[in-house]
Amino acid sequence: MSQPPGFPAADDPADRALRPRALIEFNGQEPVVRNLAVAIEAAKGRKEQLDHILLSGPPGLGKPTLAHIMAKEMGVEIHETAGPMLERPGDLAGILSALRPGSLLFIDEVHSLKRVVEEYLYSAMEDFRITIQIGEGATASALTLNLPPFTLVAATTREGSLSAPFRSRFGIRERLDLYSVADLSRILSRSATLLGVEADIDGLETIAKRSRGTARYANNHLRRIRDLAQVRYDNRISQAVAEEGLQMLGIDAAGLTELDRRILRCLYDQGRAVGLKTLSVSIGEEETTIEDVYEPFLIQCGLISKTPSGRILTAKGYDHLGLPAPRLASDLQQRLFDLPKDR
Image (cartoon, rainbow, N blue to C red):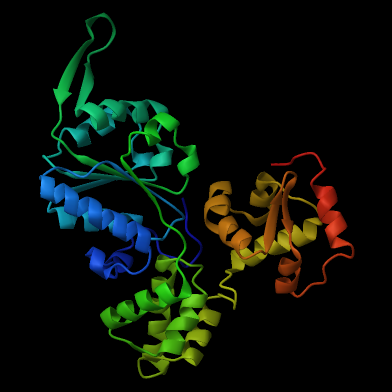
């Protein structure tokens, strides 16, 4: 899944350099961190591997980071892959057969697993064994391979896309939510220290407020603003410097990017409920990226609303664009609920 323009990919080396390496360094997500700390301590006390863990939530909140932290705190090696990379059961078999006792296998975007690969995981997760098909046709045979006990940590932005049998095989299921401004400010303070740039509270808070509740975006904004501060402002980030840097990045006061604003403008221009396919074609972005990256934030901000007929611009959305809302907007919105669905 692609990221918004200017934002780092999940495996960006610069992003990894700012990630915490222990649970005590992980700011925010307190319930998740607390529950994982208890699970780790209990597993270590019993000298067992962790239960299989499912981490869900929007992108950029720290799911891969938590997987690496868990492996380090358990003192085990971690193997990483992603759902789209596992095309056939054989792809997964090669990874599973290389695991050592207690190893942690991290699968990102696990909702992208093909059903045949997902079902192949069932016996591996429950009984720690897999069956490998050897040969084809009449000469085919099956070889059962025992696996060492391991922990599967799976990350997804679409938990609802996982089958019920698959979800039920995870002993621990945790959801990560968007960060508060206070949490992001603490994350940015730590990152600024690592980056060697001075930043005051107001400057960090300004960045935090425009980072969509997402640590990855906040750190990326900080790195770009650090460049500006180094070149023009003696390596110091104040509120004014932060605002200038965010303006250069095209991030407005609500944390919206240019593509966010194009979505709002598209809904305004259409003047009716808009389906996902229509929206995708109109703004030139993939449906999954709109649905997973942009739309949740716009809905949470109250700028757009989803009706049975499609997406519509709210009164707050009109205000953000500086455009007048239609007269009798409430009546219009009510009528949209009665229109044929356009998804």
